[in-house]
Amino acid sequence: MRMGCGGMGDRASAEELLALAVDVAAEAGAMVLQGRAAGGVAAESTKSSPTDVVTALDRASEELVARRLLAARPGDGILGEEGADDAGTSGVRWVVDPIDGTVNFLYNLPNWAVSIAAEVDGEVVAGVVFAPALGRTYTALRGGGAALGGEPLHVSAVGSLDMALVATGFGYTVARRTAQVAVLTRVVPRVRDIRRMGAASLDLCSVAAGTLDAYYERGLKPWDHAAGGLIATEAGAVTGGLDGAPGGEDLYLAASPAIFADLAALLAEHPRADTD
Image (cartoon, rainbow, N blue to C red; front, side, top):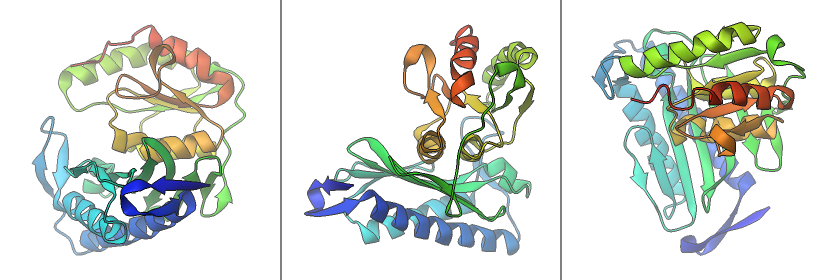
């Protein structure tokens, strides 16, 4: 698969973009691990609420990722959780979460990751989710499948919603969390069980790996789901949002095919219950 990158005067394949993303994610992940080992990890500031924290290593990771990507491909755009926002001129944009699961990282829980996706003309074509503390590298190419450490991934074969293990997440404001819990009380009786693990990218990768049957959340930003969503899709998951729309901030749902429609219908009963 070859794709033009107009402003660069060259061409980049999805495979080349993925290879670059994997290398950069590995470097950023190693830097963050070393920073934690050196001690002194603490919340440096907050964003949407006092519980929505940012560490110095979030910012250092995004700076490293942006620097490495743009050194290799100076015409590309970049969108990052910690403020990087440049459209670029090449038709390629990188979507970056430098530490997805910052609260887990802050508390020294292993469920956090560096997430990097490559878009070409607005479509995600390659993605990597690197979880250093778990020793896992998830990757995907559009049309080329998904893998964990090079081994192909496939979603679960769950056949009914009542047998599904479903993950979700919560926002950071009191109003959003309160409404999300109200929705959850209606979901819990309809599924096998619920998990909340605190990193959207890894929840999506768990759907891809079949260790979760579905994941849903409202309030996600592009960097939360760009790489993980491609990985889930390429492993056979169905992804989407409300009323047949693409997954986005109103709702992002990824599920094994047999249960997607039933779970989407259940969540559509409360389409905007958790907006601020």
